[in-house]
Image 1 (cartoon, rainbow, N blue to C red):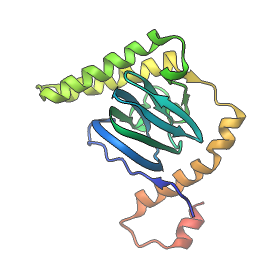
Image 2 (cartoon, rainbow, N blue to C red):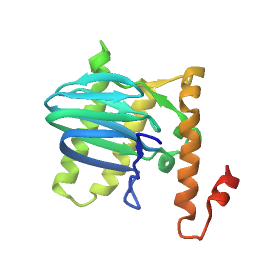
Image 3 (cartoon, rainbow, N blue to C red):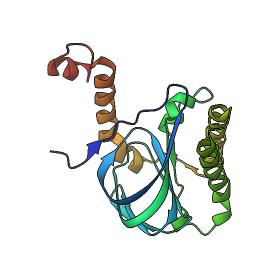
Length: 196
């Protein structure tokens, strides 16, 4: 039996992003098909991503790639989480969903490369807090800018080791996608197995 759970992220119909701020303690092992950016506002967070643990403190940023198993431990830390569904913004590159990013400020000596991401997240929070007219359009534009920053600064080649690591998660993702697309039908376990 898997120790991890699959998290279903519900996005608004017209937005490829979901952004929220929360105070946390413990978040058990889970995974999802969207990438997730974390920005720590206050406190210290120990996060384990694919069996590697990092300690994040105030203003640290970490990107969790799609299908990466992760868990968080903290005592009253406050952070912003930004989840991005790359399948909704892949008009320019059909392989965007398959890309891997290495965006982790606590392991980098070049902190200035993270400033564009910090600025974008802060702008999104400000826009959503005020609910100004046109904020949905601005969020959509900012999500494209954010992805362009990730592509320019943090994209890494997909190595054989990464492919091996992702192999089983990709199969689980296909299974979850089949369930999401057919849940309203009366399908059996053999239908699901046949699709695989």
